[in-house]
Image (tube, rainbow, N blue to C red; front, side, top):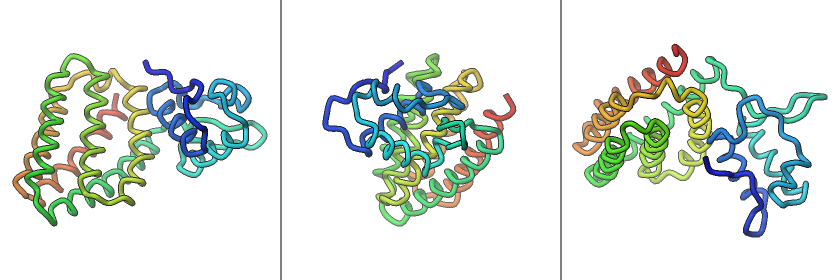
Length: 215
């Protein structure tokens, strides 16, 4: 597993620190419910406490960290209700992104998404790799909409998705259903079938909730 909590190799800023912590949370280096020690993190990252506090404040505003009075700062713990709410928000963003893609030429974006699905099929048998390619697909879907605001909002929910997938890896041990679902969605976008793509996205999110909660 990559080590994200390590000294920064470039000038530290709250944004860079927030990015490092976000990746550490998403990839399970900072686990759900874990308490963040300011002094320890500052030492590991090689930064002063001022920029570190600003970076952590950004993640608190995003909902990835939670401050508990008289106890400290903790990584959010994803309950079933949190998972449902997160996927509700992701669904809204990704459906909006798909609609925007369908306002223009869809063959290019659809082809990009199909190439990612090919990578997913080659990675079958490696749940961690399939999980990362799954996330890559959805990041690409939103990026291809060319909406900076949708991309910014999506970033937090993708981190929470990573938390779920890494914490519940056994639930996603089988890749074949994900290849099929992503292929159908990518092909619907490629041929410009907006209504079908929208229905597939809704079903895909509902299926993910079921697999993550009913484990």
